[in-house]
Image 1: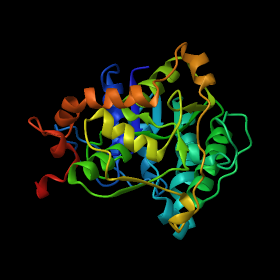
Image 2: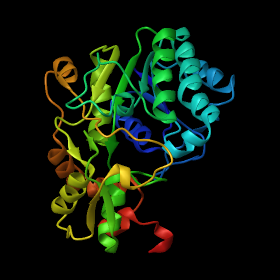
Image 3: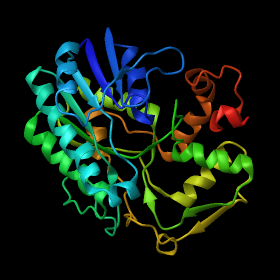
Length: 318
């Protein structure tokens, strides 16, 4: 395997996958709908994946051995408002790309979500459980899983949730918490929503290792344990030496969100452990890694002398 294409390469995971694969492969091409160049000069191929034809032609031209499809519509409430947009980006685009990848003889990795599981079922969810998506986002991603595996039976589908240092664009969950803590803002975090958040840099590495193992089918990729979102926020504060006082636990039912959310998306990662011969990091270990990689994140954002506040604020507001 020497050549790869990464879609959504300006997003949180896509940029991390692009960076990880570029260390080991001869040629890695990143695609983005809205960003032409990442900080540091890494140019991206501009493509609107919603339009049939150009992406397929670009894939044939790139001649990849691997396609990692990270692009998606992830705004849960936006998906709820516009099912057609959610279905197009999260189900139809993955199907088309999987068809094109198979025709090119390339491996295909589809990034899915932990939100496909039944959020009312207790315990950690394993891959063989029946899915029960409760919102349009999760339903569209679930349909994308089926479309990809039907079109490319050797494809790898990763069910995951992540946080970490973004390069451009929207802040991740951990970054948003850090920004709020540094500003001294009141943060309301769910005390009854449990997840297995994995640092995006670790997830990018795990994806590459799974591809190297020629893993196929559905694989959960999350932390080795699970915490509530309130607990996660307090762990972020502790790891970075910031006061927890602004954090307040609230229930999911108290917020009146436009789209329903699953309350429990804890992931059983025993299949991942068996495939790789090692467990993923715990949530606490992941946060320690987040703090340890702050300097590298500053470099990736093009902010060489950045302090923690610089990493989580828009540079135009500093």
